[in-house]
Image 1 (cartoon, rainbow, N blue to C red):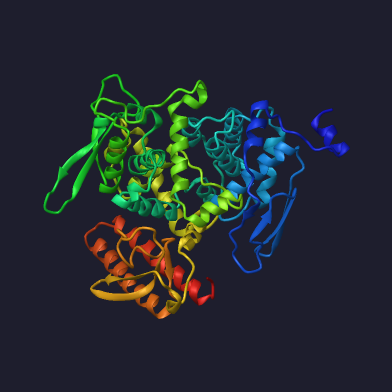
Image 2 (image 1 turned 30 degrees about the vertical axis):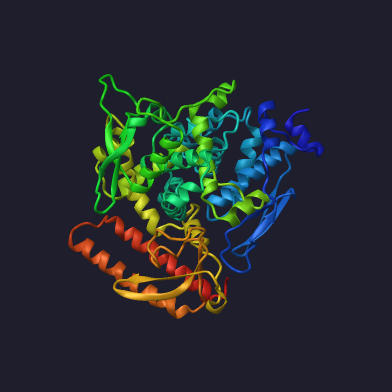
Length: 518
């Protein structure tokens, strides 16, 4: 009986899953709910995933997703739907049918099948379902789903896009794989764990995972480049006994060797990343000639690949830096675990540098390229990225970035707070007791007040007037930064983005308090 006959007879249609894929799906944990980013109080905030009929209201419309495949295919489709909703402004909604059709009608569920479909769709200049299928393909790669390899993400990034009459469709293809709130979280947690108290709280396995995250975030090496790193690749470049400041450097190996062997270039590392890597080398007794990230054989050829071990370490670190509340939700299967690849961080490095007006040579140096060909492509993409950043709130994670500001902890009454309180100086003015701090360490190594908004340790007090005073100061700072940057001809000053994010974080807290939200 073929699939059409099964459908006509009322039986569930099945996908062409291999035995290995079925076992993988069975081993995956399905979150009990799918959270939906709501736009109004009338929208449905979540759906129960155990049901095979998902119905939710959004912006005055009702959407229904029906899971009528076999049990394993339904579970895979649900997992992909949840991951899509987590990284986009809205769930798949009407686009759900494209993903289900792809799974149901594909002869094999492999990267090559999905890649061929995307190529064919691009050549036909049809955009229906293209961007959704491309996003789903990336999730399958990140999940390490059988038939999809980590290295496939490089090939996926080069797939052709439809040439449609609608110029705004190309913005859907710009995948913001590093949301602003995630980057902010990584930076703050690296600072926290780089302290003596923070390092002591880490086990050896956690420290190794965190070192992989730190290197990925600061330099974006490929798995092959990780395998080429040695103990001498990371070292102190300078130390000031008076200020106690230390400079570290990383020797970046060439990602793809040319015929003429080029010596590794050196890039600066932040002190926090340098301290974490130095502690990692010390604990694992890594000498100058030793590989920085050796891999151990377990008898499983696929699992033994260093790229797989690094992928696992990276995502273990991403889980480690989450708040206790988020970890609890993940453990209870109420929230999907964040999953990224080394290539996501690599693309983030290149795009961020291109947006900051870095030259092709500078981008190639940091990425370890022996030519500027790839760097030129990143630079050519920046006009669309910049326009997307400021004007587009469509089917991409920009709105998710805004919602990420809700990482700030619940508000409390000042009279009821018993722990650390937050006070600090902003532009020469003392700001007193704007909230509480629920940090685990005795001392916070971030800048008081300025770095608190958007931190999940921060518990803002309900006195809105204090936060309004902070907003007025950071707004003036933002305007001054823009003016100075404009006068000096440096419109791409990275401080503008930092000031914008700080201002948005303060505004989000004020809006929450004014709206009566916790």
